[in-house]
View (tube, rainbow, N blue to C red):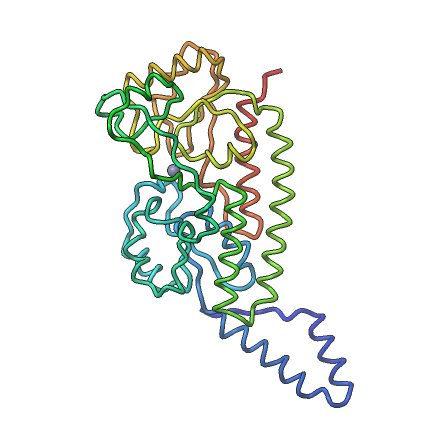
Length: 341
Ligand SMILES: [Zn+2]
C-alpha cells in the first residue's frame, strides 16, 4: 500500500533556512532520509478484534498507519466465526490488538500463529490484568435456558445456587473502562514505537492528544451522569460494569452474560419484581439485540426502554472516535434515566 505524506510547511521552511546557511548539508540529508524512512516504515496495518479497540488504535495510529477491525458491525463480540478474509487480514497484520481468549475466542487460534511482537493481547499485560474485576456471581434457578446467563443481588438465591459459578472468570469488556482504555492506548503506542521508531514523535503526540481528549470527555461524562447516579435500571448484557463503576451508576443487574442466550421464565419474573420493588427507571436493550424479553418485563409498568451500544456500531474510526463512543454511551444512559419533565 502506498502512502503520501504531506510534508509540513514548517519543515520545508526549516530546510530552506538551512540551505541558506553554510555547513548544514548533513542535516538536510538527514531530514530527507527521515521522510523516505517514514514512507517505507509505514506499510503496516494495525488490526483490532472489535470496533472500540479500533477507536483507541485509530487515535494512536492517526497519520502513521491504517487501522482495520475484524468484527463486522452488527455481529456479537461473544459469538463470531472468522471468514477466510478475516484470517488473511490477521496474518498480514503488523500488530493485532485484542482483549484475550475469554472475550474473542474466535481470534485465539489466528493470534497464536503471529510472532509475539505482533500479537498484543491486552488482558495479558500485567497493568491491565490488575484492573480486571470478576463477573458478578450468578444465581441459578435450574431452568436449563438460564444456564450461565443471569445475575442477582438476592442473597437467598445465591445460597441456593448450584455448584456451577463464574468464580475465577473476569469481566472482559475492558474497552468500557476509561482507565483501561488509556492503558490500552499506551500499550499500542509502545508497540508501534518499537516497530516504527521513525514515527515516534507523531505517535507521542497522538498519545498525548488521546490522553487530553479522554480527560475532557471523562469530566464531561462524570458531570452528566451525576444527575442520574441513583436511578435504578437493568441492562441487557453484562458489558457495562467498568463504565458503571467508574461513573458511580446504580444498575440492578443484567439479563444475560451472553446476548445470544436468553434468560428463562423464572428469571424474568424475578427481574420484573425487582423493577417494581426498586422503582426502576429503565431497561436497556442494544442496537443488535432487541429481544422480546425486554418488552415482556416492562409491560404494564412505568419502566422505560432505552438502548445502550457497547460497540459503537454507528461510529466510524477516527482520531476522536473513542471519546465520541464514550460520550454517546453517556447520553444513551442519560436519555432514559433522566426524570421526565
Ligand atoms: Zn459483551
